[in-house]
Picture 1 (cartoon, rainbow, N blue to C red):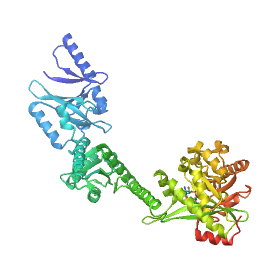
Picture 2: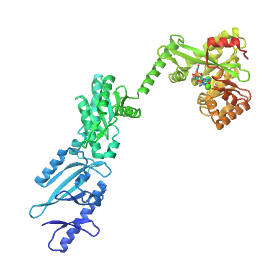
Picture 3: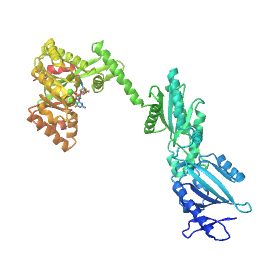
Length: 588
Ligand code: C2E
Ligand code: CA
Ligand code: CA
């Protein structure tokens, strides 16, 4: 009995079993077949004996993305993924010829390019003389379906395209490697490699060529890594190398360098097209960069992202900069501890920056600013080490060291310059959690033989808002004792505007950023003017920080009495320069 293909009027072909008569039973059978064909969740493809597609069902179109019109007339190559070695299809073909059927798992490719796994059954239909007339391929989509144990063992650890291991294999090997490293106190290195810029290859030459490139790169990688290393393909164009031993920074860097060189070589494709890629590599080391399996992979992926951002063709250890910064911070913290404990401020010194009445250049005050010459790191800015001191709980001691120095300095200067300007001292936020601070300060000035009115205490807006209640109380007490209180960096932290009237203040220091902005745009200038007006209404004295240029100074001309502190007049000066200045300049 010969089977024929007929087309319905709407051009949807059906399989028609050839029949001598058109009896009712046969009609029913045909309708039933048509129904199964149309509504099957399995994809069905019918080809002729030469492999030309004659018919596909709706499930086929849904799964592959190809309509019947697009598929009919093509060959099954339309959905082949190129993930299988050529030998795979030869085997399939051979078995089909010998036994008339084949079944197994196949990686196919949808129209979108996505590759999916299918369980495929191919059967051959023959006519009465045994001549092949059709082949029917019924496919069951396995993507997203939990695979059976057999499928798991077959596919879980293997990347079908490159025949390398996959992410699951890496995870499993990482578990073993980390446990071993823990036991033997050795390092484990993990490298995430991106062969780079594969997208243009896929887009311009086609996905099959992209696969070809990946297979070539996989072979290059395999030849380059040690036998003991685990090489896997993570996803897309990303590979990973896990090194169980000899995973020091130097050996990992050497391997990365070698791989970059090899992967960066132009690749000649089978069609003689030449492709040049730009690989990038991220390296993470256990236990330095992470404490567990997932963390190490994440760290290596992060390092890889940094390498990629850094311009490709390069490798990068985990957050090298962050790493260095962390080390530097630890060194600063440790050294500060040493300086404050043992060597009585060795390397620390104070500079003083005058605050000037711009009308006549008179120095009305000076701000004491810390300087630190570190034995290994050189000069470190207080903008860097003060936050470290604050985070490591050393800022209270550091402030007190500064205050003692300043008090002693004032006492000494007063002997020579009875009209010495007021000296400003910066207080860190932590002082407000020290209930004894006011008493301590009072004892300190008494010991130095100086008066409270000769000192101004600068507190930042942020510190004030952080410890609002204790701050109001403590500053009230300090003010009663005669110290002047200045609100530093006004306008940068939390807005203290609403509570400005609650704080016992003498002075407002307008942050440098306002001066910078005001000289650039009108709105910022108006804002500066408003703050100045506000301070004047609250009877606060004013210091404008960061005046560097004449034109900035000119902006302040109509603002009424205020002080300026900035490079235009003076930079922070070492003690010797201050003495020279005090000798030649009239003080208040
Ligand atoms: P700050 O209290 O706002 O000090 C003013 C900073 O602005 C100083 O930086 C000063 O050198 C800089 N400056 C002054 N005029 C100008 C100018 O016209 N242009 C520019 N670009 N900058 C100017 P410095 O000395 O690096 O201090 C940075 C910060 O470190 C200080 O900011 C303060 O918050 C903190 N600090 C400094 N010394 C101490 C201290 O003894 N104790 C505490 N707790 N903090 C301190
Ligand atoms: Ca200050
Ligand atoms: Ca300031």
